[in-house]
Image (cartoon, rainbow, N blue to C red; front, side):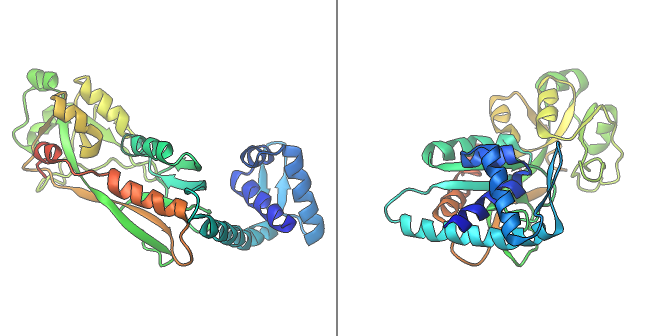
Length: 302
């Protein structure tokens, strides 16, 4: 059991790259974490981490040891959960990688925390492609399907892109009747963080139209905020503007020309035993991220 406890400490240090952060998660001091790692290195006769005043990084031997250690810790957690699931509620830490779409996921995750107070959420928001297994995530949420035979997946729902602006903006600049009319409008654009390219607006038959640029950013919230202030037209996913559409704070334009939809999936390592904490998370997100909404269907014509 002492060896298993040491493995758990090692995995936490590897994931957080910090003795202090690992100690905080485990409820022990950074000094205790450091002593545990030192004892492991003495026993194994290898150096597991490179240490400096600013960072802790895995050695080549440490990276090799981490892969097996994660599996052992995961199997131990699974065994414990399997024994407890009949008498206790789901509990333990869930490490999730999520896209930078807080308007969609944060309210649902807040509900999840209230429903399952014994589950500790460890959330990592990023739009990069992560290696779910190698990086030690319990699950990830992404748009589009990730082709990886090591993963299982469930579709959470489908969303559509819409061109929207504030009524005050269109009162001043007129409503575009066709995509070429956008050339005389203020357009609020999204830049992909990885490639640096601007997102192409999904207009059927006008994909090569070069739109004017009034503002560029790499998130949803900024474009939504500026559109609400009457500063231009933005291309946004419908889930991010449900309330604004329902209240009439934003209106859609060029609905007959706009056509793009995408799916959200939750993915997790396949094979083996699924812990109760992961099972309830998957079910919870599947039921609540994209609830049935007749009102939204009327507001979102695609």
